Length: 412
Figure 1 (cartoon, rainbow, N blue to C red):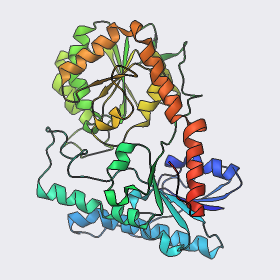
Figure 2 (figure 1 turned 135 degrees about the vertical axis):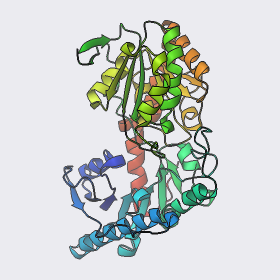
Figure 3 (figure 1 turned 90 degrees about the vertical axis):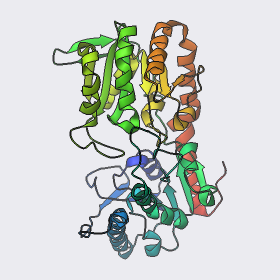
């Protein structure tokens, strides 16, 4: 079977699927913009590059779609070159989010198309309008978001099948397309991501050694921003520190913006830290920036309470990884988190906006942690049973690729 992967940041979500298919003897080629030097045994990496930029002064509602058309054209030209070289895929497996898959069916009309459906933007019921602190900008904001879905609608219409990592994400898609989407998580390697009894982490310029004997609260995001509850967490932290005078907080995350808009000036990290700085004991807070994966696992291993917050949006891998590490989790009572955290069974839920309730939930979890071993163990058991890479998710993805390539309706 010939498989064409398409992902701007390949391998992205195909980090495990692509090498697994190559190892099974399938011929795999991957189109990418940002990772032309990435190497996977058995996978040919083909870089492509847009030939032009966006049109100056284009209508702002159309700018996003034009960018995706430009990328789609570039990927289509690269696909034509592959076709000329004699490569014709049986199946195209791609992430349509940046436009690269737009025209591939026109290059390979007989190929089956399996797309990763990450999120369909909504003016209500998802991230937009969720946070009253950041109200939408009325008609213009809604219209821009609706136009942003143009690429998503074309992707859904053109695919044979789709796959989403969570039911919440699949449910953002219009009902017209929902019966052609399987829900399969990307998968977590729970053989690697597991409790580490002797873990430690050295933090700060003085390399202070921290381990499980310390009362450690952890908070992890790619970037510290409102979509991932940075403002809610840092506002709750003064009360947490008062309730737990020995607690040390380790915060992982950069200062950029992954989702939503950037602040008018500076960074979201500094914007909200400044708001509560005078009420915090900064000597008990360590900002670690973006860490290595090894340090990330050590951090989770020594965590006494792990806080995970998010708007109704894409669920982070880090929550499942924290579950696999037997972390005691306090998560936001939002739809994507409720899908995996059952209050009092494998973690605890708290109101995203209520800083006092959040502080109380974290303090109670810390105070009662010795009595909550069953909750932590259940978190790992659920991670293994539902999200394990080798026994659950990767086999399901391989079956899905085989079914779609063969024209069969996937089961489950």
